[in-house]
Length: 369
Ligand code: BMA
Image (cartoon, rainbow, N blue to C red):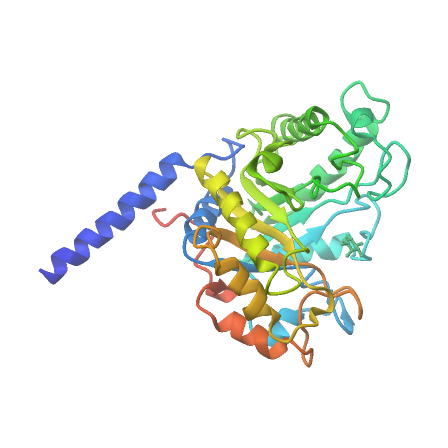
């Protein structure tokens, strides 16, 4: 009897995995086996846990820079984050916008992958029309689209990105990357923001980019993450949505509703809308960027972030949450040894709902492979 019950449970689990696998579709039907497995496993885990991520985690922390093996997260909690965020602004130069050496970045991406972690890339792309940075919000989306005066410059940048991604190989396998370009576009601070281009222009830019990378350049290890900033309604979130065939993960960045416990009502509301939207499309959601600068509230991790994420059962089904970089004293979002929220971060890490790198199953293998 007991054996039979166990068998039934196993059968149900594998049937539901099979069901999920059959349904899940990536933007790139030719995605590598590891990329498909990662997407499948993230979706699966999103239903029961949240992965923790940190921008530039292996590159630097408070009081150190580029020291092998180091990570503020690991030094506080004993584990590396499950998700590593990287930034490729200034690609083509030797260092990125935050003085991270691109060659080192390639090494860290591979290192995280080899340990079983997940890598995501954002891109604060310069304004190619003016030569300014991404915060130079002179409208220029139209100019970089086909037929525009800066289109070739955009292709050159994309080609640099392609070269970079091609270097992300471990034992002949391409490292899967969650690619999150043109983010926070419900805001107006970047040249691809809501007031800087029309929804049609934004959507064209996104679709062009996907087609160029996937069809022309044949990159098959990218998972496309669409990430707005805060939004009011589902319609608002979808205003510039490029379409189900162009987006794998529905995400959003929010530095607003995590400043106090009261604010988390809004967070929960938005996460719920996001997860509902994603699940209705057979996809899943992520909380792609957040953080409280200098983590000035002792119990921020459990009382605000985790509570906020778990406030809505639906909203808690996000795959991961990532906090921003530990740039310098005055601009950091994760604890380091001795920092005032370090004790609470350990509680956050120990909560069974949060997953760090060492808690992950093999994300690059489907359970049935
Ligand atoms: C911003 C800040 C900047 C940084 C940029 C790109 O949010 O952290 O200091 O240059 O992201 O990483």
